[in-house]
Length: 124
Image (tube, rainbow, N blue to C red; front, side, top):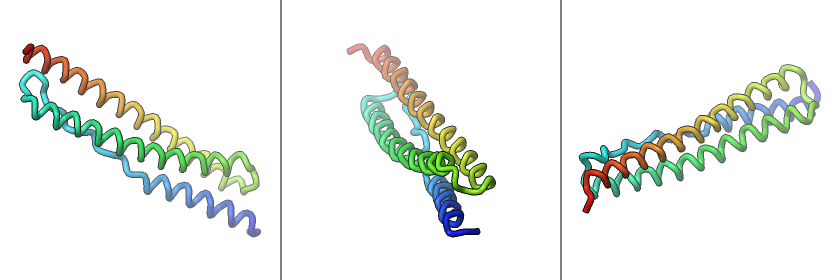
């Protein structure tokens, strides 16, 4: 294997390793708006904000992983196995990124539902 192939293989392995280092945040436990106290709702709001901040960092990490894999594929200088591995790494990172976006939307939507329930249960 020549030096260029070794360098490309190392780059691909680092993008795969980078994706493995991306830590998916856990979705927060949200209060039940129908029965929660104001303090519970405020704690829930803070938990959502913390989750969103962690999710942004997770998505940035995934962006780095799929950008690196995409660069390997576009260069086309690697051997076939390396390019196929880069394509797989790219697809996995993009899938994880899209799932992270969906997760954040779901958490925000659920919290908004709980806020509406809280307001309905506490009209004053």
